[in-house]
Each structure stands twice: as structure tokens, then as C-alpha cells.
Length: 504
Image 1 (cartoon, one colour):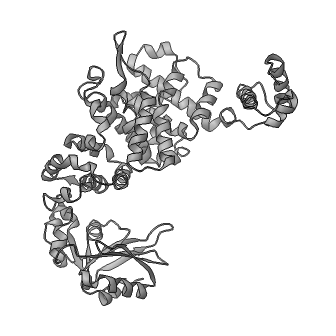
Image 2 (image 1 turned 60 degrees about the vertical axis):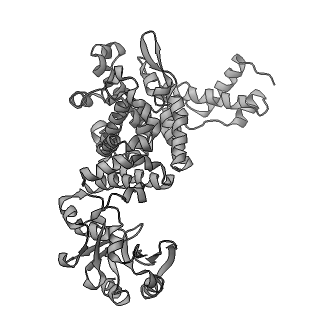
Image 3 (image 1 turned 135 degrees about the vertical axis):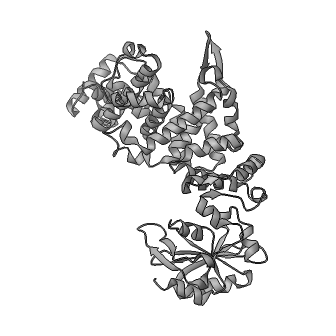
């Protein structure tokens, strides 16, 4: 569709490319849609006329704002036509959130449109050969694009749409831009308004932010502005909890450090688990979910903190934390599957530590771990890596990381080097569990050798929960190497019936 620019000029000569497509093109970053602003009176006729010429699907997306969407059938080019918000183009641009988004380029200027179709999703689009003297710029957006700065167009933008505060940090992460002091100051004033936008809109911004490799520095800045705890008020009590243990900032300081480690791991998993980096890809690609779990993993520590025998303890904080996380995630309209996964990770994140309290990690223990956690097991191991490494410095981590894949050291050996040794042993436990999962699947998920019907026939039992218990005993025997084939499994059941009499 090389003549798209010419077709747009002929069909809607009064239109202007606006917002993201102009800014992204100036940065040489492809966009997934074309936004064009038009006078309100022209919008409906323009949408149908353009759709006919492009042979595109068309529908009114927002009647109140006058937004029409067109998507071509073949190349999946998305074009959004939007009515001016205000009396004219100038008013429209100055009502936008940030100066770099308040840019427009006339359709009549005929930019070169580079279209790159994608196997899935919309085509990627880039406007080329933009003439700077043709760019409409009432808010010094060109200066901000050059300086890579995010500036509000006015001090009322966050009151008009509080979600823009979160969008500032997401844009900073995605583009590598700096948020101006003026904008940060206004976010601090308006932070409490972030509770107003719909949960799904907030979730979408958080998902995009967390999908970047710069999310940690953004949430630290959000915390300084008061936006993080305005968005997640459940985190505010962490600030003063356990300062004697974590230092100034308490549990919240720890939470942010775990988030940083999680981001570090997801971006460089090959350094932590070189043998399994490729196999871990399905998990490491779920950056947003992993980071959300890291952010909420200790959410219940303040409400469970108690002194016992001179020590500050957080009994059952993981279980209560899972319940609190569920409420938060439901508020943000996460899917049921996502909520189950994140809450399972939070609710069981002490399990590897419990395994590490034994000098030997048995096959049976590993089997029960992976059986109980299911799909959350491997993602949770990565969360635990972030949790454990948050207690050592970058220098210490760099020193011990090469040893984390070595044979599991004893508890006594770990205690000789105090915190660093404890962390290293915990990392070795994680490596051992991943080794069992990826290299010894028969120990972790053994195939069933017999059925419930076999058990009922051998022991002359009617259907009951007891059948499942017996089958589980057979599976454990497989894991421990006692049973290796069907014949041995049947023999095991017969002996089990002799040593465990059951009522028929």
C-alpha cells in the first residue's frame, strides 16, 4: 500500500497525523496505528469514505469523543480518526497529556509511510521524511523529543485523567525519557487521584511498564512521588515495618529490592541459570506477571509482624499475603488464571526455604513440591531467586553466582559465612529443583502405571477417596525407585492392602 499517503491526502486533506505516530516517527520507532485528527463535522463521512477506498473494516469506537477505527483486511493497518477535542486543532493538541504527544503533521504534507506487516497483530508503521517546518507544535514538543523529556502540557492534565500519571512513568520506561521536575511535582500533588481510573486501565499501564527492563527505576520514582502507595495503599504499612531488620524504609525497601532482582533475573536469566535459560523462556517472557508477584510477595508482613523470643517474625504472612493479593488483582481486573498463578506464587514462596532447612533434598520432597505448586512452581522459583538475592550486595552476588549451580553445600558449611552462605545455599536449592524438573521428569511427573480400577479389583474396594490415596502411594514409590513398571505397581498395591487394612 505504497500510495496510502496520497490516498489519505485525497480523501481527508483537512486531517492531521497526531500524537504517538508523529512522536514515534521522529524517534524512528514504528507505531502500530495511525492517529488522524479531523474537525468533528467531517469525521463520520471521512471514516466511511476512507474505509471504502481502503476496503477496510470500520466502526465507531467512541461516540462521545468521536473516534472511528479502520483496519485493512490484508495488511492489518489500523487507522483511528478522532474528532478535535476543542474548537480547533490547537485546542485539541493543548488538551493532550504531554508535550511530545501534542504534535501534529498535515496529511497534505505527504510523508512517506513505511508499512511493515506482522505475522500476528497490526502492521508496524513509520512516517518518514518528516519536514520539521511542517510540524504543528504549540507546546514545545519538538524540544522535548530532542531532549528526551516528558513534560505536561498544563498543570490540569492529571485532574482531567489521573491515569496520565502512570502513563508518564510507563512512557519513561518504554522510551528512555526523563520525567521533568515540574511534571514530578504535579504528580506528587495529584497522586491521590490515581484511585479514580477503572482498574483495567490501570492494569494495562502497569503491564506495559512491567514488560520493560526499566520498571524498577520507575516504581522507585513512583514511590518517591507517593504514587506507588496511592495505587497500592496496602504497601504503605511496609514503610515503617521491620526497620530494625531491613533498615530505613523497612519491608517496603526490601520489596523494591526484590523487584529489582526480579527484573535483573528476567533480563539476564542465562547468568543465573545458564543450563536452563532457553527452557525458562516461557516464564521469563511473562515479565509483567513475575514483577507483580515480586511487588506483592510480602504485602502481609506488616499485619502479621510479631516479636517472639526476641525475634521479629511474620507467621503465615505468605498465606495472608495471597489473600490480600487476590483482592488487589481483582481490583485491577486481572484474569482468573493470572490471579491463581500470582497468588499461588505468593502463598507458597517459603516452600523452597523449608526444603533448604534439610541437609538433603529428596526426590520425594521435590515431587511433592512440584505436585503441589503445579504451573506456579517454576515461576515461583524465579521469585524466590529474587527474594534470596535481595539480601546480598551486587558484589557478593557476582561472587557467589557461579557457585549456585554446584553441588548443594551442607547447612553447616553455609552457616560459616552467615548471610552470604545462606543465600548461596538457597540458590543451590533452586538450581537443584530446576535440575530435577528439567532433567529428571520421571522423578517429578512420573507416568501412571496403574488405574483406580486396578486398585479396586486387587483390593475389592468400591469407589472412594481411598483409591486416590493408594494411587498417590504408588506414585511416591515410583519417585523413590521402589516401583518401576506395572507389575511392580500391582505387587505394591497388594502389599499395601496387607499392611493397611481398609473397611470394605
